[in-house]
Image (cartoon, rainbow, N blue to C red; front, top):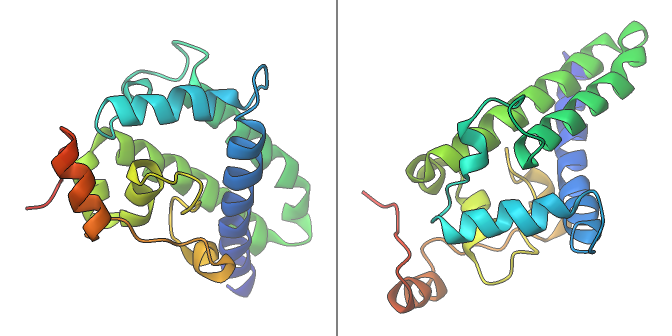
Length: 172
């Protein structure tokens, strides 16, 4: 059980690190493989009021941000696989986290109202003016630890931004 929990916590740290340094750090550079995250995913989300239509189809239909995300998660699962013989709980925790990351991220961008209610840190990552904060998707543990959790939902800044634009707020 401790191994499983350690795998979950380590995966959340990896989620934070990869999002910050790979998907945004490298992804903002032209002609970089990771560019899809910044140039396509973030653009879709801003233009379509948090929805990302790339999550609406099967991952085998196109080599797009969704299928690249799945490929990266599968690659990570394969890399950690040899550890299953020495640290099975940890490995299963990592595998579960990778599955959960995809499940939660997909749901977030297909159901913006759900995200606004249950994943405010991810809403904050995409919709705040500074999209270089709030790196965790599934749970903001490492954002709190690293000091990068910056609330936007429900702030005066969000209210001003919503009044200035045609953005929709997903409150009841």
